[in-house]
Length: 246
Image 1 (cartoon, rainbow, N blue to C red):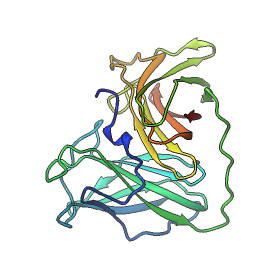
Image 2: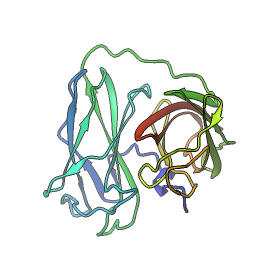
Image 3: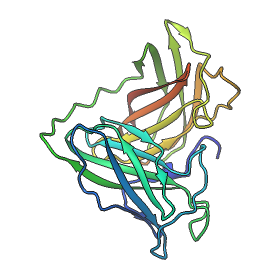
Image 4: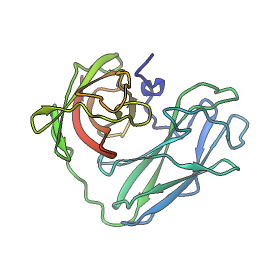
């Protein structure tokens, strides 16, 4: 269905699914400094997968989130000929982190299936948790105000809309980002379950907005932290907002 990643009906918390496994020797990453995380995806035959379909211009989408739902990073790692992926991470604060690989095999038994696998790592040091911001329908980032609406129920498809304004005026100059006008990722408070959603709005040049519609499916009830990424003037913005799913 346009606007919905089929992986969004899962929670992304497993390292293996359908015979595919996310493998990495790393269990820790350095504190407060840039680092690289290397991993492979093995298939049902136990061998590294090297054939991936392109999804939103990339063969692999990679996410990092701290257990308190801070420190969000969305990267596009590079793959070596042997199937080893390298993700360049910005500095990480101390604490437990979960790292997600979102991909679609382009051959084999899982061909065409959208998968999200994840592994955890620890970053040494004193971990000070940040309290999740209260549920709110609006947030601001870089001078933009983002308002999100939707009557969301766990396990059910609903429309979610995001509207953008700046200085009280509707934003109409959104630029395409990964073949869409906005990229939306969400994580569940408590277990960091994953949901990945895309706007249904058709891309038409550098004048997207002010409203974006999403086909939203959240696997669990509770509070979710949403990260909306959009581009204007060649700059990528990331707005974070907390929503409740009934």
